[in-house]
Length: 376
Image (tube, rainbow, N blue to C red; front, top):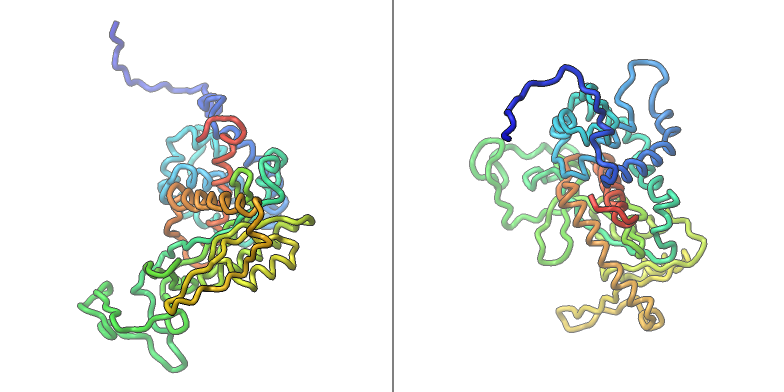
C-alpha cells in the first residue's frame, strides 16, 4: 500500500541528539578521546578567561567544532555554523541540544582568538597522545621527521620591496605594473626578488620559498611533523618561517620536546643530511637514520654525505627509511581533507595554531581504525 506524502510537523520532539547517533559511529570513540583531553586542559581554560563578565563560547565546544571542520573538510567557519544549525550529528559532537541556538560566525571567530594566547592547540595534541590507549599505539623508540610548505594567504603581487628609512612605498602603475586598478597585471621579468629585500604587504610573516629546484616559488610557511613509526601517528608538530634551514632547526626542536631518556632513532630524507643536524642528534642520544645525499654537482663532484656505513649497513636503518615515507600521508590528509593546502589565516601565531589543530585531527581520525572500529 502506498503511503501518504504528509509533511505536517510535530509540535514537540522527545528524541535527543544522543539517540540519533548510532552506537557504533566512529565519532563516539573520537568524542570520548577529545573529552578526556579537554578535561586535562580545564585548568588552562580557567586561566584564559576572567571570573566576572558575560560568558563566552565554552572552549570545549569551540575546539570540538573546529575539529569537525577538519574532519569533514568544511571550508569556512561561516559554513561550519550553517551546518551546526541543521546537522544533528554535528550538534551532538559539539555538545549542543536540538533547540540550542548556533553562534554567529564572527562571534565564533572572536572567541577562537582567545585560545591563541594559551597555545591550546599544542596542549590538546599533547593531551591526546598522552592518553594510555593512544600511547599504547605509539612507538617510544623509532620516529621520523619531515617538513612541507603551507601556502600563505597572500599573492605574489603583495611581495613588494621593503621600505627603507626615508623611502616611500612603490606607487600604483610603476615598477613593472601593466594596466590600471588595484589588481593590475605585473611583470617581474628581470627583477631580483628575495626575502632580504622584499616582504608581503598582506602577510608579513610569509616567506618566498620552494621545496626543491625546478619548482615554483610561493609565499609560504614551513610545517613540520614528528611521526612515530609504529602506526604513523603524529607525536609532535610545529610551524615556522620558510627558511633554508627551517626543516633541520625544527627537527632538533621537535626531538627536544620528546624528552626521551633512552636512545631513539630518527628517520629523515636527504634534506636533513647535514653534519650540523646529525651532530646535534648525537648530542641528544639520537641515532640519525637520514637518507644519504650523494648528488653529483654540475661540475661532476659528488656531494660528501654526513652518513657513513656504520649506520647505513644495519637493517634498522633500512626499516626507518621505509617507515619515514608514511609521513607524507600526514601532509596529504592535512592539505586535502583538512583544507590546509593554503591557510586561511595570516600571521605566524594563527597559522601555527591552526596547523597544530590539524595534526591533532589527523591523529583522532585514525584512532577508530587502529582500535578496531570502522574508519570515519
